[in-house]
Image (tube, rainbow, N blue to C red):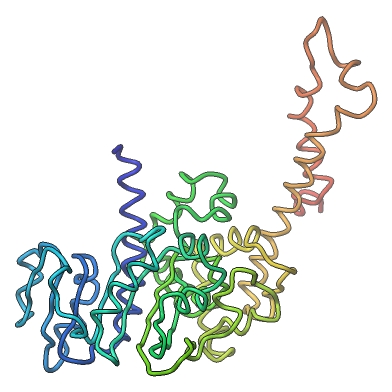
Length: 362
């Protein structure tokens, strides 16, 4: 593994783990027996488990470092799930690597370990979910057993990840995206802005726009799976971001969200990052964010969008002007085309004509 790949994995891990810790902290540890699958799952829930009173009996799959054991009074390590008693665990947590095509068999195996009122918390990539299911509802239907369906809640998260196709297109390369997101590890205002967007906005975007899903399944005695306080458009593959569900995506009152949003945009890197995002995020229709911005942030973003439009128009002219009529042929001498050499002078004329230098024009 080269250094660049290692850095990319570190950035992804840090951003992902911050969100999983944030969301899992809201999950109350209920019952007396908890099954934790893997070191990462235990690390993410460590604070919640340590704070539980009384602490549950924890069974952890795999070898657990001594540092994790210090404040856990009832921790047992196992190498396999094969010999665990059925219907014993009140909560099962899996936040490790993705399950791929084995989602349904894995859920069914864990289902047998749950108590009649137990719950499963699992993190899955949206890609793996939607490769096999049209929606989270269909997944839950598939893994439920007759007479004991799951009530479920799903949170899309990790929108800002290094493999997001639209983000890569926005930043023109995965390397450029990696460099931008890497600032989150050392720039607190930027890190706070990413968390603000993830926890108050992108968590309620259509799931296919995010990298992962945190799904909580609560076992019930109902005959059909059902969701708890989750918008129907959220976890359906066919849904996209539209102006109609833009405000629905906010988890704060609109005015509070707008105030905090504008406060974050007082920081330059946050404004530039938002501008780059808004250019490329796929939408059914154009979304006007101006009503949600304070005047200073709106003026700055308007300037950035105007300059981007000027750049796009100029690049289009440079790409096509010499293709008109016989221009290329006329400007070719002894087989050497000279038309592109004129681009250096032409770009200055274009930028001036399009108003890129308003002070000079005045």
